[in-house]
Length: 222
Image 1: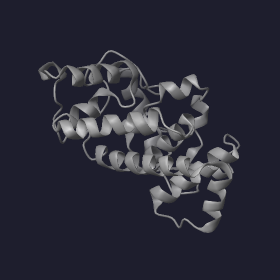
Image 2: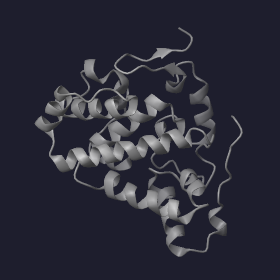
Image 3: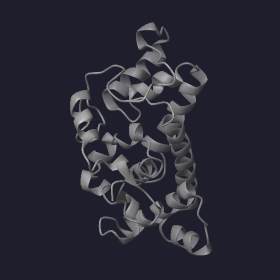
Image 4: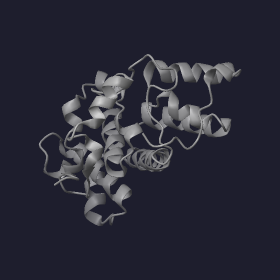
């Protein structure tokens, strides 16, 4: 693995009870997992800015949580943030989202995995992530399925997660390094450090594939 660029703040050195409680929530529930918060903890304002925004517009809010989860992982697949892309929302699983629902995200328009509501949200996410034109057809599509408040929340959420993922991928952080011992919110094949290493070494590992908006991912070896 490439050298980590910023050190973790060890939760054992934290005296703020509220911050410790949030670290424990990350350990038990994930999304985010403890490592990314251990980076943000260097600046408490950054730690809480992300934690509170994430709670307000991802775990809660006015837009369907499972749709936001699909959009979050779409961003991961697009910007190749492995740290984020190898997590799954526990709440979305309880709402019925299954691992198969993540498999065709980059090819969502042609996929039978998603309904028109999900595809509209993913199209909006695609436009934001890849800087595509947001034309009248896209906006008409969004307004057929969502309220203005839902569109605002989704756009804001995608902007936050895209920025965070583009940042985190430069840091070379990974899972099971801070408050290890739980598999909360980990995708299948990433439950612990050993199985995670095996999954990443597989030739069909998702981050090894080249991605273009609207096209099926292609292996870098192809």
